[in-house]
Length: 363
Ligand SMILES: Nc1ncnc2c1ncn2[C@@H]1O[C@H](COP(=O)(O)OP(=O)(O)OP(=O)(O)O)[C@@H](O)[C@H]1O
Ligand code: SF4
Ligand SMILES: [Mg+2]
Image (cartoon, rainbow, N blue to C red):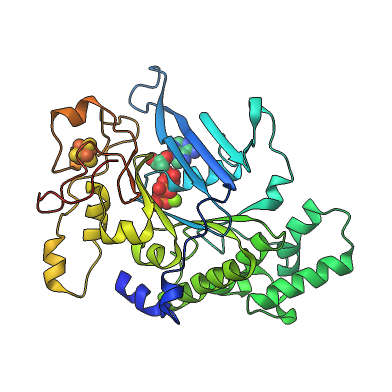
C-alpha cells in the first residue's frame, strides 16, 4: 500500500487536527517506562545441547506517556514493537527495568499487577478478527471487561454501557447477538476498540490496529481514535509500520531498532529534521510527491536486520549505517538531548543525508 494513499485518505478537517497541539509536557506522566528489557531464552536448533541463547527483543527502552498524548512507535518488522506493547499490558514479563503507572511500579518486587490497572490500560490488537473469541456474541465480547472488572455492576447497566459504546463505534443493537465471523475486518476492529474502551481506560496501546485494513477503513478507525481522544483525554500508544499514519495521529514518535530506542522526538521535529541515520533512512523510504525532495533524501536502508540473538557491538545500527566508524563499534550510544528537544542515540547525529553539517547539536 502506498503511504501517500493513507495520508490522503485521512483528509483532516483542519490543520489543527493534522497537527494537534501536544498535551502540556509539565503534566505528570501516566506511564513511565524505565530501561525495560524483555529477553527470550531460545534453544539453539543446530546445537541442541549447547544451552539456550538470549534473544534481546526489547533492550533497555525508556519513555513516558502523558494524559491525552499519542506516542507513535515505528520501526522495521522484528524490532520489538509488539514485545514492548505486550510487556506494557502485562502479557510479556519484563527481564528487567520498571514500568510505572502514575509513578508507582506496576509490579514492584516481582508482585502481581494490581488488577485495577487492567481497567486503566487496555490494548487493541493488530488482527481484529483473531483477537475476538469466535464463540462469543458481540454483546459478550464487548461486555467482558465490565463483567470482569466491575463484578457489582447490574446486567441492565452493563447492557446500557455496551449499547452506548457500540453505537459510538457506528454499530447498532441489531449487531449485539451476532458472532465475530459475521463482520468485516473494519467492523471487527470497531468491536475490538469498543471492548478496549468500555472500561473507560486512561491509556490504550494500539499494536498495528489498522495495518490489516484497507486504506479507507484505516482512515475511519484512525479518525475515530482521534475523536475519542479529543472527547475523553485518552492517551494512546500507536504502533505502526506506516509513517504517514503515525505522523497523522501522534504527538511524539519513538523510533525503535533491534529492541532499542534510536530517536524520540516531537512529531513535527522528527518529520522535519530527523537526526538519527535510521530515522532518516525510514523517512527516505516513504514515497514523496516532489521528485527533487525525494532525491535529496535518498539515504536508502541497505542490508538486512541483524539477528536479535547476536546484536552488533556498540551501536546496533552500525552494520547498516553509512556514517559508522570505529567508535560506533566500541560504544553503545546513550539517548542524548538535542537543542530542538529530540533525544537521539547516535554518536554522530550532526550530519544530514548528504554528509553536510546540520544546525542542531547536543545541548
Ligand atoms: N515469545 C517469543 N519467544 C522468542 N522470541 C520472540 C517471542 N516473541 C517475539 N520474539 C522475537 O522478538 C523479536 C521482536 O518481535 P516483535 O514481534 O516484538 O517485533 P515487531 O516489531 O512487533 O515486528 P512486526 O512489525 O513484524 O510486528 C523478533 O525477533 C521475534 O522473533
Ligand atoms: S552511532 Fe555510528 S553507527 Fe550508530 S547511527 Fe550513529 S553514526 Fe551510525
Ligand atoms: Mg508486531
